[in-house]
Image (cartoon, rainbow, N blue to C red):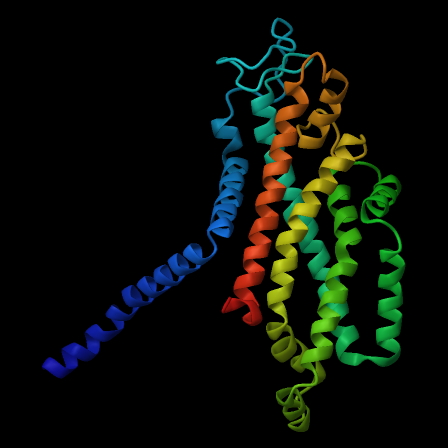
Length: 299
């Protein structure tokens, strides 16, 4: 009876032990990468603010108060108001939603297109590699923001088109990164063994090469989120991104730029939000690189 009860109770003890093991591992990583841990916390906080903006925002982002136009920061309006009396804090919070959404979707588009192309290019080689890489080189010949501007100009301004434009502009980075990983991994002995066993090429690519090449893609995706946020803000600042009256960090900057001497707060607070979010994403990406790269893990 005692043996059977011990056998039955063993699986129940595994989960708490595993949870404690994960907690200890996370705590160890946080202690080793203090700046990275703070950056991850900042990213999580900004994402929480984006998700809860309709709940925590003190005002309607579109509500205009002509008796409170260009009010300086105060207890009633901590970030001040714009030229039509809209609360800047509320609009910055709602702009967080747009920035996070554009960043995630744009990076998703880049990965969904660029990674398969890079994987096919590196694995197949030959003419397939030349065709795909020359296409990527053609896209890389244009600065990414200029390419995104051209795509938005063709598709017309709007949130979805900004995501597509930024995603396509960043796609060559993921394609070339994936290709370099595939070229290195396909020479390993376990890939040769898979070929000798008659495993189909598609299965080798997606079951053996891709999982072993995913770490640099994750790091690049974290850094790519920062670029996507900057690109969306830049396009909105130029007036070809997400269109008014939707609140975005770039559009608030656009409205505040002519008012810097008269009402500095209109442009200052969205600029600080962009700076902090991109800084946290870049520091988090650096920490991820150190954690996932076995050559740096022991340093």
